Length: 146
Image 1 (tube, rainbow, N blue to C red):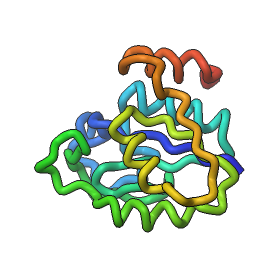
Image 2 (image 1 turned 60 degrees about the horizontal axis):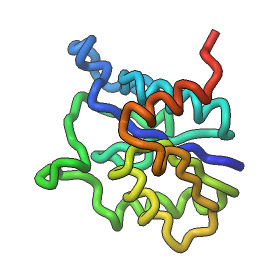
Image 3 (image 1 turned 180 degrees about the vertical axis):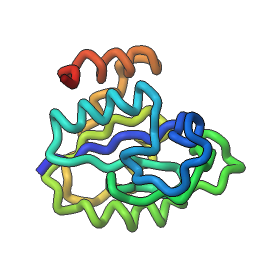
């Protein structure tokens, strides 16, 4: 089995619908990059999870109670610890391989969390350039939804 790990995004459903309360993780994130990575993962992986700085690895049906703004790029943010993320990673150690479709800071945390676990890790976005190049890669390597 191949697991895809995709990033969350700053843009969330509450930006458009502030009256919304709790939503599933697969309905919360709205950025184009997130949507392209999800489409890529749906086409190239058996399943996917979403990496959030607040919650860590979330299954698509994980319920997010409301809006939040936490990122790994702000050291003062109360993001998930390495220990918690590594504990979550153990739940996915039976996967044959894992495709990580996250920008550098998020991908590095995933790599550390899975260190020593059996799945083969793949980082197709590593070394291809900045955010624009990563965006083009996932957009161009997935079939548009009908």
